[in-house]
Amino acid sequence: MRRTVLDHFLIFILIILAASILQTSTGFGFSIMATPFLLLLYQPQEAIQINIILSLVISASLIVRIRRDIDITLLKRFTLGSIAGVPLGLLILLSVDIGTFTLGISILLLALTALLVFNFKVKATGSRDYMVGGISGLLTTSIGMPGPPLLLYFTGTDAEKGKIRATTLAFYLFIYFVSLLTQIIFAGTNNRIWTASLYAIPVVFLGLLLGQLLFNKLNQRIFRVITYILLSGTGLYLLVDSLIKL
Image (cartoon, rainbow, N blue to C red; front, top):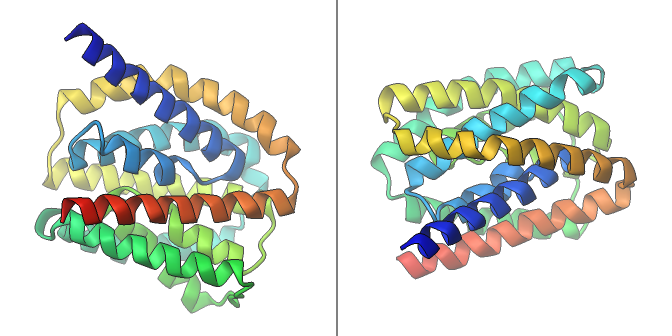
């Protein structure tokens, strides 16, 4: 029994460390990597809330240093758009089979990643900014993963990596806080979620340090390759996992 608990804890720590490094170095990565693997260790609601809590810690820790790179206009549009998406995501979490929904998300991720690999371009517009924010808000409260729509949108518009990271982290501060508050009020929470999050915080800060070192060494081409790997890898994992559970 002790070995089982220890194995569970070590796997949890490795997931959090790897996801923290990715989040810090790319502006994405934590929810994209952590949530699918945390679902192997926790119930869906627990995995999603742990992800949200730790993502809030990461965003709050980084935002002060990179706030000058934030695109304020884009941030406002994402934020306003997300307000419509948050309640829809909560409705999905509480009423729709999460496995079926995750299957749909995995197929969408793989299809859109393929478009980006083949140099598909998206022209940024105000209406699309709002729409992307709305989808991100929906995904945050439903499966705890706001990153994919932002990542796809930024990659398709050839945005600069510093702007991507800063704007995304600033948006996460808002959307994760609102989503966590909404989930606690309407879906509840438990001690296991907060205990696991507390244990993970030191690991998160170690990931912040390592991720910052990696960010300084990334050029735009490598950054783009990492985004493709993140999206395709997450899509494949969610697809296989969803099919197994159906």
